[in-house]
Length: 165
Image (cartoon, rainbow, N blue to C red; front, side, top):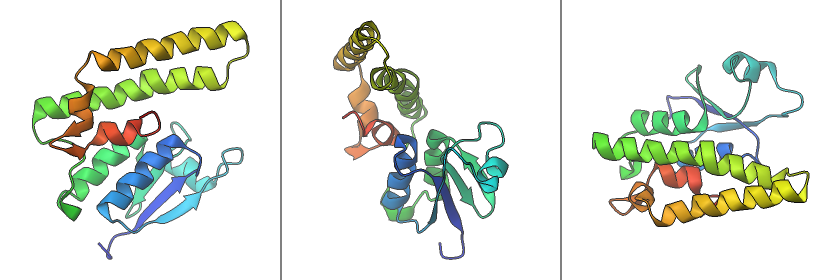
């Protein structure tokens, strides 16, 4: 892959950026990491992600890929046979399930975690904690383990949920 250029626009503390860094490392991809100042976004970030203007952005041979889950899927497709790893199952149903749980992490668990982190009142904290407990209890009654560990390997759901497991 030495003939390919990989650049990651990132912020070290970002859980979304961490997902991408883990995926790149798992595939053994050498890349340039460009740390972004989120209060003073670079012209490159604004050019590469003009819609959301946020990190992470993976630039592969000059072409930007935005949003961490999309980036992980892209890495998986472009580097399909690298290190014998697959982040998504090849079976369409299993792939849909893995994508569902990755989306659940982003749209439900991450939002609840942010409510806990940034609460302003005791009532907001208690409500967010109840939401989190409900989400985690749901995991106990669902098929999320299949999405996390399909065929004994960590998949895309695992990369998205590493911070809560």
